[in-house]
Amino acid sequence: MLPFPLSLRPGQPIYEQIVYAAKKALAQGLLAPGDRFPSVRTISEDLGVNPNTVQKAVAELTSLGVLEVHPGQGCFVARTISPARTDGLRALRPLIENLVIEASRHELREADVKKALAEEWHRLKRKEG
Image (tube, rainbow, N blue to C red; front, side, top):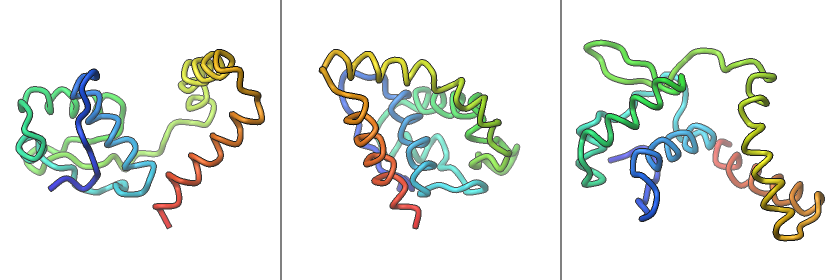
């Protein structure tokens, strides 16, 4: 059984959904640094998807530094220190730009977006405590 929720949806590549779910679980505290990550076989069987698809997701999570592979032991959530805040903000810039564009398209105000962001932040982070 997966240590984080994941309901596959049509229209988005499955490996991207797995990557997103793992990153979300880390943000919510459902996965923590040092935790064992489920095997490719386990995820494949639980979701009923091709193991190659799951392997692609694991490779992506590894390249992002979310997972570490320990030969002979499996995959674990990385214990490494997260990148500097400036690197993190730089990585978020395209997402923030897209958020501002979409908010403008829907005629939302900055205050509306800030409120929605704060609510979502608290909703996700509430699960940690």
